[in-house]
Image (cartoon, rainbow, N blue to C red; front, side):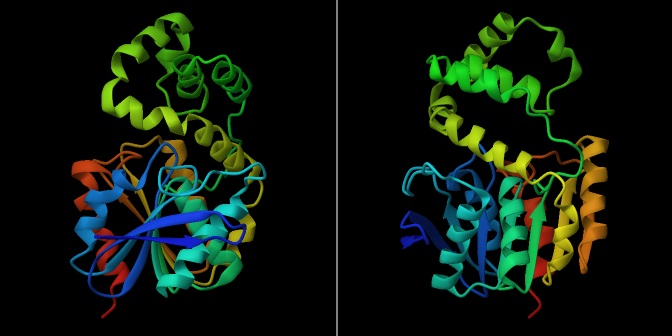
Length: 273
């Protein structure tokens, strides 16, 4: 596996790792995630593709988000890797799926793309957690910030809203620690910026009708029904798209032991040899 660094349009260094043999494809991950989280998926796809696994900005090995961070900056990063590798295939997860679809909409450089639960907002995006999250980060309270995110961003079960903040903060300190927390802690600021960009895309669904690439939209059967309805709305807006639901998976399907299941659906869609 090789590490390569390219320079994005604003001068930011973007690192990516290459593995496998076959048609070139780019793998672009989501919020609170680094390239390491997608190594199982990249490895599962490396038997069929030359996989270029991007370490997105704001993560070790790549440059910082920067003071004027935006979705457009992420698109420029993706396109810099694409220009270096010549890849016309790609996979994006969550926020990375939004970046990939935006790149496909504005540049037309991809032939086929697969996205897993892409962060294209259809319904209003909860933003009330962002101010207290930012305040807790500024106060040096990362666990307190994380509680605001978990409770306010729309993914937590309803019972968590009834529990006191201090109690959840204590639980988070017990549950998130060690190597896992050391990996997540540096991504807290990026998480806020990235979710801010997701919220800023509200009302833009119709613009994705300009995507010319063939798109496979994947979602997990264990994800909320309301979210699955949003992915169906995106499928209906895209000119050439298929939606598949993977029954026993949730939002984190492309990671860990379930990555092979996602790879088994992505592989035949992207590889038309």
